[in-house]
Length: 108
Image (cartoon, rainbow, N blue to C red; front, side):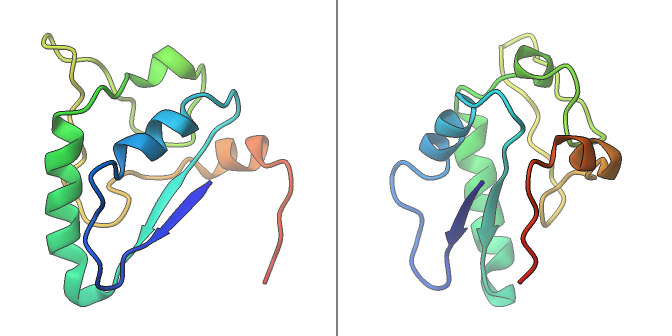
């Protein structure tokens, strides 16, 4: 899991693509969590979508037999995937899959 806090600084040139490529190397499910103040949510979300549309991000089935999201991502004819257009994670978490893949849980 990578957690990126973006309170007032902008995204760096490599964010979030470099994080996603690093996470894709793991065999277990991974998560990239971007934390922003509510006032910046829409601005940062639009920038994340813009960057992901031009990135080499793969379909769900390339890496996972079962994913932790209910949505399945498939490749478009131009080898891109559609980025969710909802705020937040933009997907619904499959709680059962998340429980199955959880190796350790720490409650703070």
